[in-house]
Image (cartoon, rainbow, N blue to C red):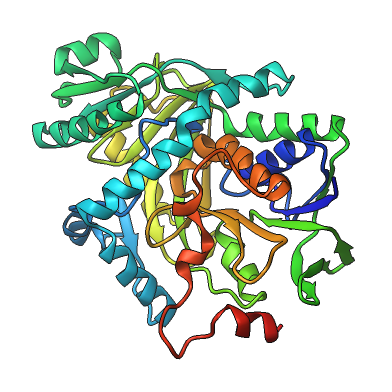
Length: 428
């Protein structure tokens, strides 16, 4: 085996480092901050293979028009004259078709086939983290939304995922008394799980350290040394040579690939969460407040609500209007949920591609530089499967999972005037 540098110590990067090291590779992990400090830190930690649909979906453009300029809505787009963003937005809209959605759902569902066994394998190998097997309850205020979600979940039965159970409003409240009288129905998906994401990244860091992986916080990748292939990654503290490299830097991955001559269409989808420590309210299973697009998870000693999608570029500005939007939305679905001993508010960047699919595979023009990014809201769910698939590709030249739908080469420009792979190789 050889040496691999993984750039990014979020859940995807740490999972890739774990899988590569488990197969005998010498691994170094770099991160400009602390491991798990970005998008992996404040989400609701859902492991939900049955929710495999990509973000661009039929009807989302029409729905988004109602939200798009409201700063407190589930979706907010900050107007800006950025040609790259406008190009991304047009490509996103082109993928909001039934055909594209079904193809994306099928691809992600297939990648998810081993998700639960892979999480069980982490536990068996001594990775310590908080994980619960409680399923998910979807709560609805309208019959239309319930029927749409039921049809979407029914698609997953062909991929071997469990049957979703529909509930009336009273049945949903019997199951979760925290639900308000406005909730007219629910859907339970029993086989899903959730983790506390901070505990998962911390558990992986501890296990990787025991396995001899070098994890280097505060090392920001600033470029690459290339002579026909990638020889080293450069940082402010010097260059680090390796045989192979993985960019798993989330929403920042596009900045790194541009330094290799490859334009990765990536936008940051900012999400927010509210964590209530010592929360008085209790839930038996995670809740999805469907029309509000708000997820709720219970952890040891805490309750977390997360949601919103803000397209405003890469920034960590915490907009209080977005946080208040989550609170008001929760008030429509939940009763007596706000009381706690402490409230922590968080914001993080989710990496979004225009087709809604992850990017897993070799950077075009390079045989030793790989990408593992673009997982949007499925980072926790897809991390172990992504790592297993990519490790096979990197070390064996093939993968047991079909990675063609996630190939970075799908974003190559196909017009005649654009640079081809040969010119990319010759202009480094």
